[in-house]
Each structure stands twice: as C-alpha cells, then as structure tokens.
Length: 100
Image (tube, rainbow, N blue to C red; front, side):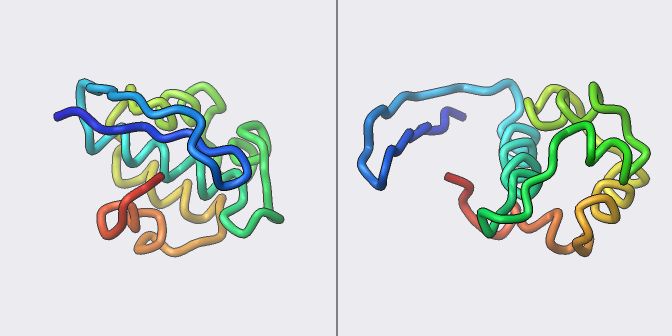
C-alpha cells in the first residue's frame, strides 16, 4: 500500500511523492513517534539520545523504530511512552489519525 509524502515549507507544498513502505503500519508508527519526540507543540523537542536516556531504549533501536524498520514489543512501547511523558494511548494515537 503506497502512501503519499507531502513536504511543506511555510505551509506551501514543495514536494509530493509516493512511497511504498514494506509495512505501512510500522512506517506510520515511526513517523508518529518522531513527531512526538520532536515536539508536537513545537517547544518540547528532545533528541534520540535524550529519549534513550529517559526510556532505557537504545538510540539505535529508537532510530530503527522511527524509520519503520522494526516491530516494537509492548515493553518497548511502555518505556517509550514513559520517556516521552505521554500515555500509551497517546503513543498509539497514530492509529486514530493521519500523520503528515
């Protein structure tokens, strides 16, 4: 299943391309995880290293999750939610909404 990736600069679409990830659900989770980590409000940005320290999950594992390359275990999801200071329901919020 292909997804459309839209890149915007100052609200203007500058690029639109199709991408066919091996697993769309993992890809969407990775995009959402990165969005949460980078500060969904534009203020609370933390690095992968900081999230690794807060969650106890290695930076490499977080990076692979953000790229949609690995399927997280429940214990990993719980640790990430704690590291991001969000509930597990928020971490799995990508299932309810489209990530852009």
